[in-house]
Amino acid sequence: MTEPLYFEDIHVGVAHEWGAYELTETEIIEMATRFDPQPWHLDHDAAKDSVFGELVACACHLQCVMSALHFQNPQPMALAAGLGQKGGRFAAPGRIGDVLRLRLEVIDKRLSSSRPTMGIIEVDNALVDADDRVLYSNIGVILVHRRPGAVA
Image 1 (tube, rainbow, N blue to C red):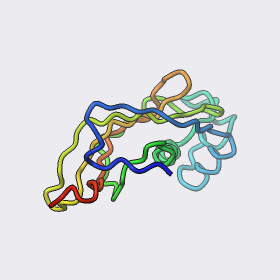
Image 2: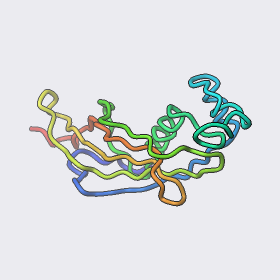
Image 3: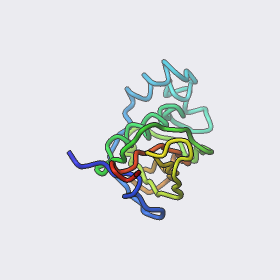
Image 4: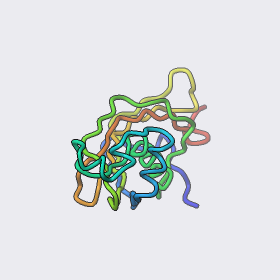
């Protein structure tokens, strides 16, 4: 296993991209059935008459895919906790067969004022398809461990 990136290893402006998560019809319907039972997520015929024109993934499904892709990061951060997100924009629907990946850029970092052994990282996250179309994006705020011994 690769050593995680500690706060000191993470630099503003650095961007990474990874993943290959395919949206399947079965998963789209299962997620929507449990969490967002709108007709355009559940039924092909009803979806044809929607603004989407076809069956599409629900918003919470795309958020879950983004989260899952975070944990496939080949260079994971020394994560202590997720602190939330800023914004959140659904720019395009996820469709059956879309293969999604995560694009992440570090946009800010600062030491934690309340936890000297940790830092706070802000990342611009984008869930994109094979055509580089952004489906969902947000600014994630993450609490990351500092390198052991970094604090005297």
